[in-house]
Length: 240
Image 1 (cartoon, rainbow, N blue to C red):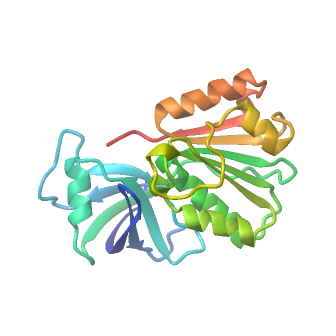
Image 2 (image 1 turned 120 degrees about the vertical axis):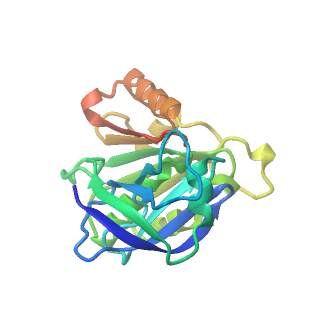
C-alpha cells in the first residue's frame, strides 16, 4: 500500500451541510473512477475513538489535476479538524482502493442509484466516462430530500447537456421543505420510476451507493423486480 503526504489546497461548500476538499495530486498517483482513498489527519488538535483516518470515495476524476473528496459535515472530531484545516496543511493519503468501477461491456447500460453523499463515486465515474467519450449508456437516479441538499447538482445536470449517452434523473422527496423550484421527479426510486425511464428493468448493470439502509433497500427493490445479484454492485457509506 502506497502512502503519500500531500497538501490541502482548498475547500468548498457543495450543498447544505456538505463540503468538498481538494488536495494536491501526488506525482504518479493513478486511480480508476469510483475508487477510494484513506485520508489521515496528521497530529490533529482533537481525536475520538474512531481514530484519525477515514475512507473516502474520490469525487474527482482521474483526468483532473487535483484529488477531491466530499462529505457530510457531521459533528465529529475528525470532521471538525478537517473543516478547520488551513490551506497548505499536510494530510496523509493511502490508496487507491476498491473495484466499484464502470463495467467494461459497453453494450450494457450502467444505472447508478445514489442517495445523498453516495453521489461521490458516481460523479467521478460519469465525469471520466464523458471525458473519454465512452459509449456506455449511463443513467443516474439521484435522490435527495431537497435540491439544497443535493451535492454537485448543477454539474451533474450540465453533464447531461454535454453528453448524449448520459441521462440525469433527479428526485426530491421533501419539496414541501424547500425554498427552491424543482421540475423533476418527487417520487422515491422504485420499479415504476426505473421502468418509466429505462423501458425494462432487466439488462443493465446496477450500482448503488449511499447510507447502508438505502443501499439495502435498493438491493431488495431490484431483486424484487427480477434483477439478479450478479448485476448489482454496491458501496455503503457509513456516517462518521
